[in-house]
Length: 148
Image (cartoon, rainbow, N blue to C red; front, side):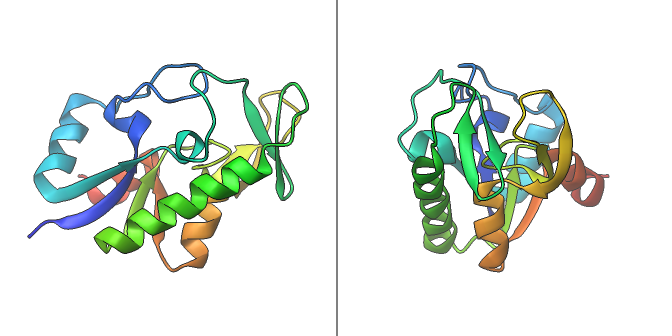
């Protein structure tokens, strides 16, 4: 039986990112994932009630604010809770999430100034999953660790 893996839907090709696009992994990596894992896609931003496309957002401390200045913290928290529910429902102990995202970023996120500056930190979903004991990895770290 394959290990269940929560994965950002945009990495599988679902056009759910803020810009209405996806960031699919290379075909070889997708093939590896499908051979070795039972994949459970999630988009916490969509699941939290945000439209696609949407105004870009970044974390500012505990809050998430879009470029227009709207506080979307509640939507991000709702999407993160949904991702944790999926992990629990499918017994996922590991999550492969999109790097630098205000939801899914793991280890480095944008600083909230919309200047493209990265700072150490996690997105709302990555933070919640880690707190629940889920191993969270961004795509570059995941494939360095799991796929070689």
